[in-house]
Image (cartoon, rainbow, N blue to C red; front, side):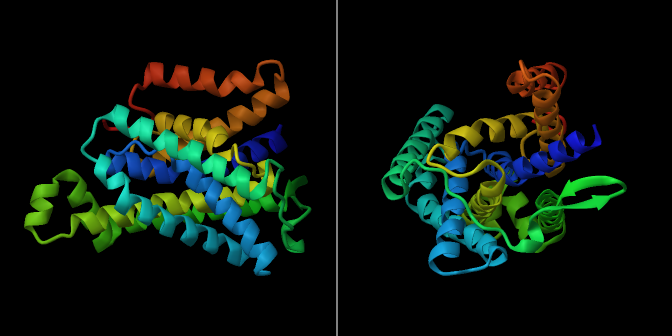
Length: 283
């Protein structure tokens, strides 16, 4: 039982890293970016290429995935997505889901449909014994990374000048511009941060679930569930929602394999029935 809880929590932390960027983007910018999963896939392929072609170690491939996805997202935000900020929700959904289809087609053409694999450093492979339990080293690493991301985001959004500027620009763009804030630059930084985190999550996910051109579609469902359960714009909500859903998904598949794949949807319905705004949502 303890091993199942640990594996579920580790999977939940992977979902958290993948989804918290969308929670920030959707909750702070009011932009429905269903292309979030495509940026996660991009980060995964960047990690694969940098490790295979450039010979970078895994720990350097992770920031490369973050930066690569963030830079590409800035180009999209400046040229395409910015035009949709004041458009209706349906236009945002249709356009960004179209980006996912295009990204999947490009990935299929460039890499084929086979699963991509990476070779982890020896110190991240295998397991260690903790309190009599054999725990996977890589899953411990996932948990550590997720906790570090949480601390950085909370500090950055709540305790720094940039975080205050982001909150001001979101609350009232016109007043923020009147105070001399460059709202367009702030939104670009926020979008890059969210997409970069998706890229980091995509790189971390390769060892657990693999990587193929359908990645953007498959994990988009999980990401949307985490954001809905946690509540828009809430880092704590995304963390709690991801942990709950990760444990529920792994435990359901282990103890009730017949319905395990549907358990997270039952959890989603039950939670939103009681808390329509999510666990920590305010609007």
